[in-house]
Image 1: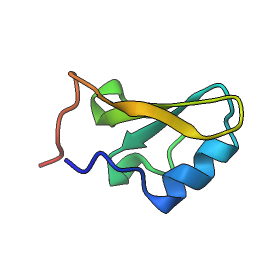
Image 2 (image 1 turned 180 degrees about the horizontal axis):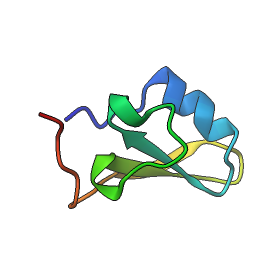
Image 3 (image 1 turned 180 degrees about the vertical axis):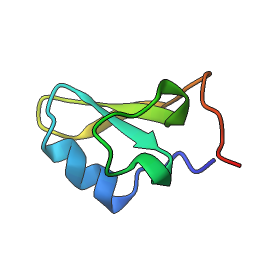
Length: 65
């Protein structure tokens, strides 16, 4: 699994300071409701909107078939 944030994830982080950016499976990218098993993992975002720390994998992630 690629744990490097994409340019889109980096841009999205700028909109969510002091939050989290989640990588989800493609089928749910535009959904308002994402089941927990569709979340690949997340990065923490600092007060300036920068991704910090390491990617945290979701142990409940189930890859699509």
